[in-house]
Structure formats: structure tokens, C-alpha cells
Image: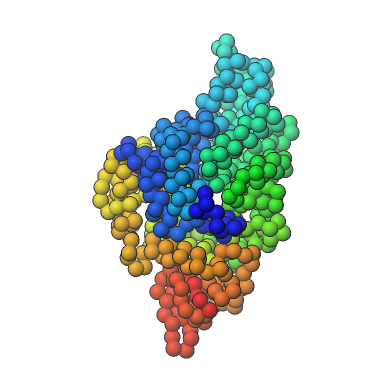
Amino acid sequence: LATVAAHRDWWRDAVIYQVYPRSFADSNGDGMGDLEGVRSRLPYLRDLGVDAVWLSPFYASPQADAGYDVADYRAVDPMFGNLLDADALIRDAHGLGLRIIVDLVPNHSSDQHEWFKRALREGPGSSLRDRYHFRPGKGENGELPPNDWESIFGGPAWTRVTEPDGTAGEWYLHLFAPEQPDFNWEHPAVGDEFRSILRFWLDMGVDGFRIDVAHGMVKAEGLPDLGDRDQLKLLGNDVMPFFDQDGVHEIYRQWRTILDEYSGERIFVAEAWTPTVERTANYVRPDELHQAFNFQYLGSHWDAEELRAVIDRTLDAMRPVGAPSTWVLSNHDVTRHATRFANEAGLGTQIRTAGDRELGLRRARAASLLMLALPGSAYVYQGEELGLPDVVDLPDEVRQDPAYFRGAGQDGFRDGCRVPIPWTRAGSSYGFGDGGSWLPQPAEWAELSVEAQTGVAGSTLELYRDALAVRRERADLGAGDSVTWLTAPEGVLAFRRGDFVCTANTGSKAVTVPAYGRVLVASGEVTVSQDGQAKLPADTTVWWAV
């Protein structure tokens, strides 16, 4: 770990790269990415200029929800390799100066977890059932769910079990797929188990954890009815009886004491969907977690006024708790921003049309430069540095998102952002592996591959490499908790940080702005006149050295 420990408080301005293991690199030609594949591509990530790598789940799992249904938290699923592969990946990453963050899934397990299997086997009254939320049903014969909660993936959040004697029995709670029963965090054995899991991976050398559904775990006492039949629209707009309950914070205070026992500045990152950025700030108080994803920013449109408001609100919310803001544009659950920005505003974060791809890429490049200029930490989702769009026309028969098969689910089209990324112009899967890929890649991805973009001036990959190199070199980028806004034309964001200025034109027409100094990086062509004025094209961001 010595190679990565030099930068104190590294996480405050870190650029963290999300690897979706099944879609990053396939080392054995089975069409599925794996840990050895990730390990082989670590030099690429070092050269890209990121500080840390966050790996989506690779634990033993039946893969009912792409690994977010964990059967064994201390084992690697054979499709990804084994614990020795994980150990080698961590060691190699550290040798290259990269840190490794792993996913932790504490809200629910797989229905194939040993605890849950025993709970079913032992029947009503089993002490193992107390570690989940088992309840008798309502109605004359218990035929109705215990309450009216709905699954995020669609349908009721309860499934009735068949008891060992063959009769219809109790119901269990699953806020996601039926294969993902929710843990009962009121039971002490659950907390004990996860504290042990944390230590297991910390002892392996990981540098932190991204906590899945960090706003879940604790449920309101008595599991009260919601009384609203369109619950999915309430998500993220209100405090729900199963999300963002105040009790989660005691869990994180306990976890923080464990993390602080370990050297090397290990961190926690929360996936916390909350109604407001102010409530998100509760998760990153000094004795809790280090970072929380900024979903309010991810959901913003490419609009200067809206972006400035969410930037100000985020910085204002994080400042009192002393936490860095985090900025993110894409991940494994939302349509890639190159496609979101290719469509008209207001369609949400799940979009099923390609839109204007040229416009989307131009905006995506500009948005990425804007994000990387903001104070705090930034997250990059694999392939966004290549300008990859979502694959919106996948055949129905290849889709694997569990929500797709549940009708009125959360979205159901997340496979489009999970298509394996292209490394080379040729090959059965553009260098992803030797045996095709588990989701089909579009033919046009050959020219978006790492090979096709490397060394090409103006390519999206080289734009990211340049921006990340500049960000590392300049102390006035990344760290800090504020920006100084500058007067700018309508549709333009302009702010200063030390001897650095960022200007972003979100409008559809070119504008004239002052040439603040030397151009460091630009997402498009910028013309500077003799009189010190710069012509900033539509959908373009420029970094200036003042």
C-alpha cells in the first residue's frame, strides 16, 4: 500500500473509475468479463489518470440481479475468478498507484444465502427468519401481503413462501427482486456479520467500500402502509418508511470505527437516493461515511441555470459537514450521459431512444470537463471516456435486467449501459475477449475503441487523458469546497478557482467570452481573437490558466 499512501486525504479530490466487471475485460474467452481481465487492464487505468477503481459486485451469486444478490460475501463468483484473483488484482493495483474500492450490498442477500435457505427449511418460528422480514399475511387465510409496499422492480415487495409441510405460509420482504430478501437490521446477528465482512475485505487490502442502497437497511417501526398506489413516483421525493430512515446513521457510525482502525485512509462511499442533497449530507458527517453520490447532479439537464443551482446547493450542503462534494454523470443503472444529452430534456435517467448522437457526444464531452473542474471528487463510468452511447436497440431476447421482466418496474432497460466496452477495432468483441460478449456490441463501436482513439488529437479518450493530467498537476482543481462565479452570457457557466477558470456554454449557439488566459483543455474548437475575446461554440467547455 506504500505506493498509494502519499496523498493525504486522497479521497477529497479523487477521480474514481467504476468498473462493471462482467463488461470490462474477459480473460478466458467465455464472453463474460472477470477479475483477471480487469487486472490485465489496470495499466490502462493508471495511464488514463484515475486515482481509484470501484468494482461492482463480483461475489458468489446466482446473478438474479447482476451480482447484487449475494450468496456468499466472502467468496468470488466462479464466473469472475476466485479469491486469489482478487488478491492479485488488489496487489497489482497498489503497485501501479491505484486504490481498489469494492461494492458492499448490506440491504439484502440472495435467496440462496445460507441464512435464507435455512430460514425456509426450518419453517415458521425459525430464529433465522428473524434475520429477515418474515410476516404472516393479511386476509382470512393470510393470502394478502403484510403491507402495501411495492418493489422498486415492480409488483408487491412481498413474496409468500411454501412451508416445509407444503402449505402456503409466511411472506418475506424484498424491496428489489424476490431473489433479494431484505435483511432485518434490528437483529444483532446481521450487524455482527457485516462488521466481520468489512474486516475480511479490509484485511485483504481493499481501500474502501461503495455501499449499495445505503439509504435502505432500516425500516420504520411496524412496517406501516404507505397508502399510495403509485409509490415509485415518490422515490427520491420523500422520506419513505423503508428508505432514508434516521436509524441507518447509527450503523455507519459503528462501521466508521472499524474503518478508522486500518491504516492507509480507507473510505466509504454511499449510494444514497435521498429527497434532497441536504439529507444526503447526513450520510457524510465526520463520524459516518466519506462520500455520497450526488444523484441530484446526475439527474440535471444540460442547462446552465439548473446546473449552477445544483452545484451551489451541493457545495452549500456539504460544507457544514466538512465532506467533499461528489460529481457523477453515468453509472451502471442509468442511461449513459452521451445518450441522455442526445435527447430532449425531461425524459429522466432511463431513455430508450438514441437521439442526436453527434449532439449527445458534444454535450457529453463538455459536461465531463465541467464535472472534472468542480471542487470535490469525480466518478467516471467505464466507457464514458470513449464517448460510448447507450445501446438502445438490444433485442429483447438478450436482455438480462431483472426489472425488464417485471412489467411496471423501475426501468428495465439498464442493459444498454452495460454492454462490454471496445478495446480494439477488430476481433470477436473488439478486444473485450476472444469469445464474443454476453451482450452484443454495435458495429460502430470499432471506431470508438481504445485503439481507434489512442493518440488521436481531439478524441474523447485523449480529452479525458489531458483533463485528468491537468487536474493532477494543478492544486486549484479538485480540492476545496467553493467556486467563484463570474459574469457570463445567458446559457454559459463561468467560474474561477485560484488561477484556473472554467467556461461552459450549454446553449445552442456560439457566444463570445473573455479569453481568461491560456487554454488548458477544451471539449471543442475555441477561437481567440487579437483583442482578448474567445468564441465559445455551442455545447463546449474550456479550461483556462489565468
